[in-house]
Image 1 (spheres, one colour):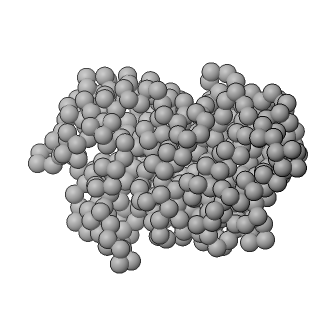
Image 2: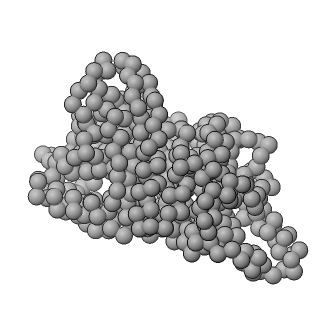
Image 3: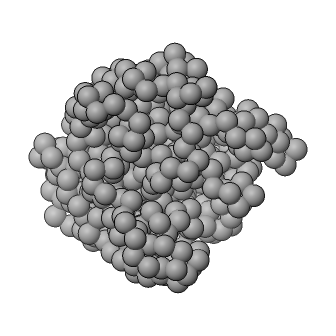
Length: 438
């Protein structure tokens, strides 16, 4: 691992020495009063590289008219001739450009920490927001920086400046620990796939007031920052609505070819979690699960044939449904009175959501019936009803032979399986899932 800390601060030390070795030089130099600094952390040393240029162009446009705020962008792309850099966009211009001397591994907690510290030192503000741009795979956990072919969390970096998305990742627990050493955040906005799961949100509950993310796959092009950026600096109590609404307004035409050809106008489902309500939701979830479990001999419902709406993972071309809509699970199984009591806690935690009923962009992880189509492309009863849609996913253990729920070996590496991995999350203990035999 490259020592990015020493490398970055050697740049700062050179300037500070030039200015008389005053440790408060930057704070004194920066007389600008900044209300909110937002860091956009672009982890693009992977196959998302091709989208970065357009995203930066949109961020520049979005920086026009944001007032006494600072839009700071960290960029790590797949260009071997351009090391990672930090830049501020202000009134449509790139200012305060700082390039790193060498390439860095953006999935390293140390690198993230250094970028965070640089941002707050140079753009000290009353409050902070963080945008995570890149790949993600929900709550799935490994070591913080692990060997290739691990699927988890956020920000894969291949380390070779290629378009490969096989590389090293940053898991949510490591992300939370790193953020815990920095500023408390007004929000985390995740511009990446499948981030809005209850397990990740609960892990990050002490790091930010709000988690703004999608439980589903998102388009490779990412957010429409030319219109969305102003929402990142909205000072109103419902600022998150402008962020979500701007993303949801983006429509992309999709041709889906899993069975029959079907075309639709894709939007992206999103939700907003108020983290101060998550402990109450954890307690309510424990209570409502006790209201219907166990079912028969199993300590969990058998969800293999349920028409639930978020998916992740392919095992021998059989879908392993790791990310079920949380509201849909409880609605399907809990007694009415128990569900209604739980839903009160859920609605206080999930304070805003938008439902992409006609479908979102997907790499064939969602089958057509979820979008209200049969295998021939015909119209059938919709699955993505507002009643079922909660906008947040939840993992439910399963007992299926030859699956990744149970211990398995892949590429000669032994894995504990998802049923064991869930026990490493804070949500497992916060919701006391062990009481259910999970």
